[in-house]
Image 1: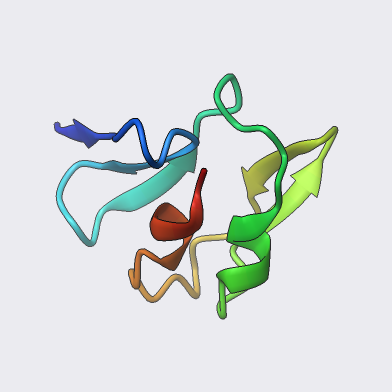
Image 2: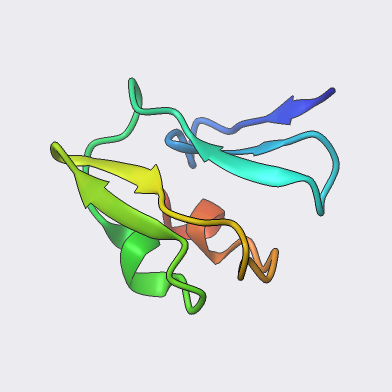
Amino acid sequence: MEVRTSDRFPGVEWVGDPGDFIRVDESRCDGCANCVRVCLAECFEIKDRKARVRTLAECMECAACWYVCD
């Protein structure tokens, strides 16, 4: 399994190959909520000042969350 991260996109990681799933690294998430705002599928929520994956059922694998994570 491959975990792809970037210094530019610290909080959201693609786990495995595209099409597998995403996860939020809460230790690196600053709670900016950019992922919540850009996700058309509403896969994210903010709890305790951190982004969390709410559901992946509707994830379109667009990577918008990954691109806006700062």
